[in-house]
Image (cartoon, rainbow, N blue to C red; front, top):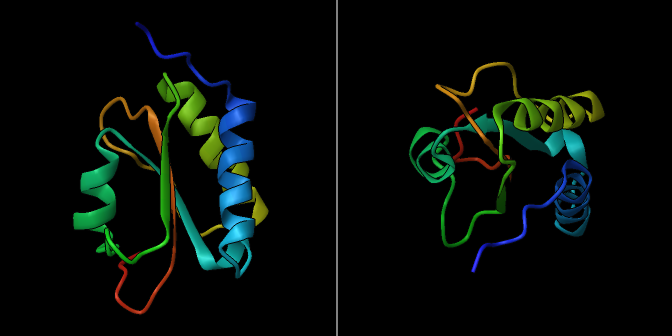
Length: 101
């Protein structure tokens, strides 16, 4: 059974809702793209997997991931270009004392 691929609009709505439900506003979140979002979040950015505030979604393509990342950066999330080789995941996390931007 194949999972139904979410549209860019659905992914944006999910991440937007997550940010709004976890407080602080866009400027307190970091948004990025990655080939391996778990490694990026928990190793590179030092997000606490158990207690941190984080979300990621499979966008299906690098182009869609970059479009969604750009959307959140325009809203005020921290972050910048990058993402590794063929990143198709978009992620966001709430910046905390221990995270590395």
